[in-house]
Length: 206
Ligand SMILES: [Zn+2]
Image 1 (tube, rainbow, N blue to C red):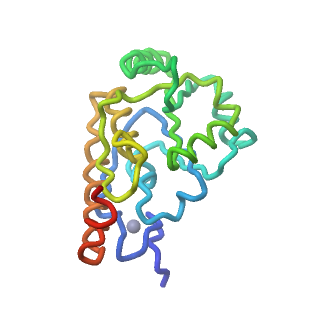
Image 2: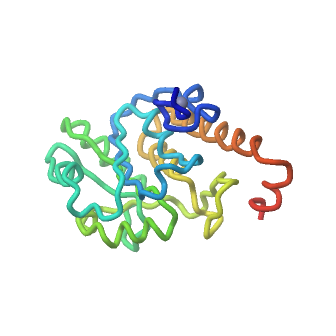
Image 3: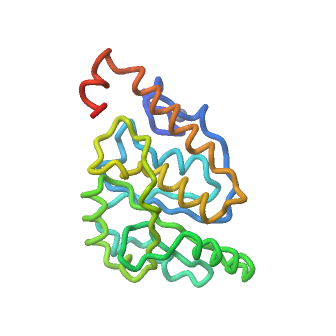
């Protein structure tokens, strides 16, 4: 018997599958994951992948030669954009309008997310030159993360699943993405409950 759940990849005693609720959504989501994220017990990209009807996780640092990503970027039926801070990023409202236009043309929107610490995501962005020509979209700066376990450079740093939740909810308000947050909250609560008493307060509640 494996120590890890075959579905979610978490340790068997920390399996998150029971909290996952399938969400049907016409937006494709691609998560570019830094290799250091893939084995972290608190990784949240998996919640998106297990919940959303069209979501892939591709692992790497430099994606400029990534065959599947390059096929996606050249696909004329798909308009891709990346959730990444930029001076001339589009508003989520304009992306929502564009998403409706695309469905009317039988095309689809693909939202690309970078999964890594702020520093690693920056490195991935720099190396992956094929991403630079994509339109960027950013989340409103007032959003705060519920990532109580991991140290973030600013209060605004959201986990990948939270970032995905906020972006998708703004682009497709008619779809209920809240099961993503429920699964995430359950996972964080479980991890905190597994910590020896006092560890959380000492190390994370800063
Ligand atoms: Zn599982």
